[in-house]
Length: 485
Image 1 (cartoon, rainbow, N blue to C red):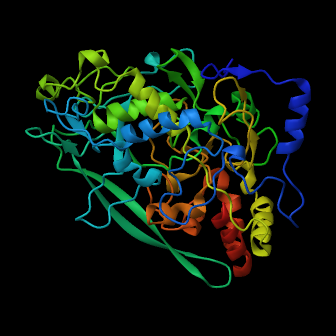
Image 2 (tube, rainbow, N blue to C red):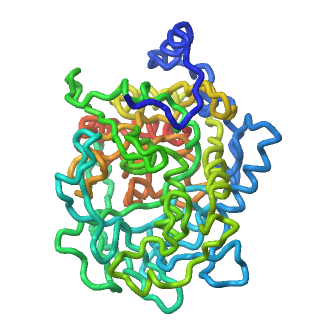
Image 3 (cartoon, rainbow, N blue to C red):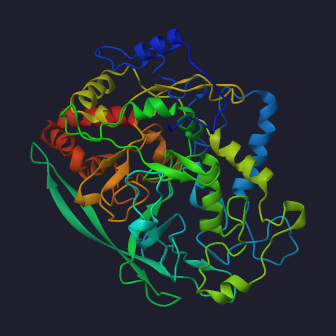
């Protein structure tokens, strides 16, 4: 059974379960906003700031005595790491290979990463994952339909485009775009950019002939703790792997291996739901993105492979006071606490006539089949910020086949090469305010929300086509609704 082993849960009573079922049932009244709709994170919601700090606030219901942990975690999240050995013992251990020198470099202002802005811009908030097909006999037996992949012998599971002094970087990311015209009802046209990715300037020999590459852009950080607190069974209840109801939507849970608990767990985080908890995702990012050893990845050489001998032999920043690690359990837990409590801003214009019309169109187009509006989180003994909150993430946190247009053809746990986790939509309209751009999807190819919709295929093809055929006035209302989230 996939339970919530990562949480200290107070079981729901039958009466609570009945109340929750009524509260999260889809609305059929679009004449006015629903109760509490302006607070997408429940009591943890904060007011919508008008500056770039809109995603950097602590949970609105955080007790005062927990604010210090949030601030210290923020300091670690913003820390700029340096290579070892150095005089700043608390900050050395960078690399030897890395994509960024700190968490905030990728998740700037806790927002969304961006694609390189021309050939002179770096790809600090974007990289390529890499793997090769594995032996089916090596697949994790406890997880049904698990797709075994192995690291590239020369480059591991992630390509790093920076290295400490004296070491070559693994590659440089190159992107070329082809413009594709899409005609909308009423004669309007939209140009989509179709990317081709190249791992250029390889520093450690050729890629494996069967190497599978997947571009990834850093996602926004808000609401993660609330996603983690949604009961696994509530997410699994929306799965329909065989499309038994015949609606063309067959959401599947990604079941992944937890290195924290050494057992299968429900994947919730990452673009393919490849990570089960915020702590594991944070530990993986420290090791893979920055090259920092931690309780779940104790190698001081980060992601250097066995073939990268010189890389593995460099001095690391492990310290006896940190159990020989570059960030110890206390530091990892503080970063986890910070990440868990980055607050979701309040909705805007929830009662606006155009927004309400757009909401009705969002529902009637079938978007809520995957972008499920609301859940109620577990009642928790030790996480007051996330405990028993009505939240509106607009995601089912399941995998869906999104068609060949978005396919990366790189599996991850149970996720196939055409499947992606439904992206949460809360905070969507604040993206430009925080990040200075409106690049969406797993690789930032969409330059605005409409382009993102037009890339939907596979299970989302029918909803996408409905948007294409809408009168311009209705499309604008739908976009106004999405901008209010």
